[in-house]
Length: 149
Length: 152
Image (cartoon, rainbow over all chains, first blue to last red; front, side, top):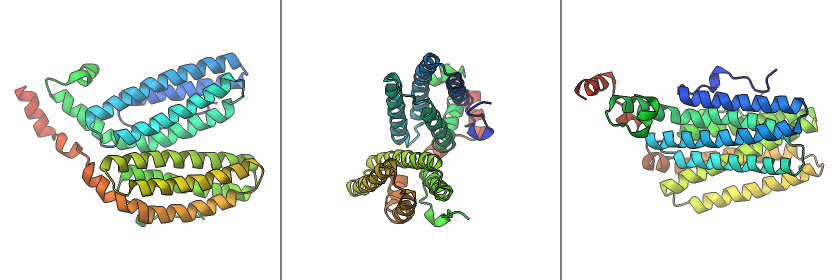
């Protein structure tokens, strides 16, 4: 059974973001699977992939918020930074030989659910409205190009 | 019955902050329940979740206050700092095997409710004034969208 099931309350209604969140959930489940099969090397690899993917997701999300003029973007970024630091600490402990997979899986799961349900939900209206605006204008910058509007 | 019931008086009017406070209240209720089970692993997990979430919430809140130019930011930050130091002490005692989950529940319950009702209420209007949501002005209705599309 998957460690973290995707449920509809995790949807933000922004397709591109939902896809990225879904992929993070897949990585968490992959990490769980590797841990269950006691493959330390695999846990390390999946953890690295998860970190890389999450970092690029945060960067993407932050640029959407910026483009939309979401007023609490800096506070949201601080929460991302804090999380990145926490996961980096786990990565460090893992590299030092500690068995952190169980604790890390729990943290990832709790953090992601809390964050998507509340903090991400808060920017969705601004971002959606901005996307709707961009698609009706002739010049929309990178956002328009990205969505092919 | 839950230890703390969420009531509208606890809302400060900034949705994302209210959501975070609500989550903290849920965690306090979870810790209250976990403490009754006497299961140290369960207690430890909720203990950590609660602390991590609360500290992350402080970062969010302090960033908002700073950006809005809240003049009591330093006082508010030192209140957070003092609270953090109390919680860290409890965490150390917990890791040394002491049964302090009940103390944490009591501390959080008293501190959080007091903090929300007084300290947090006082920055709320400034944040709402200085950092307004702009989506209302930005987004056009379907008519303006149609007009834009037609003339572009």
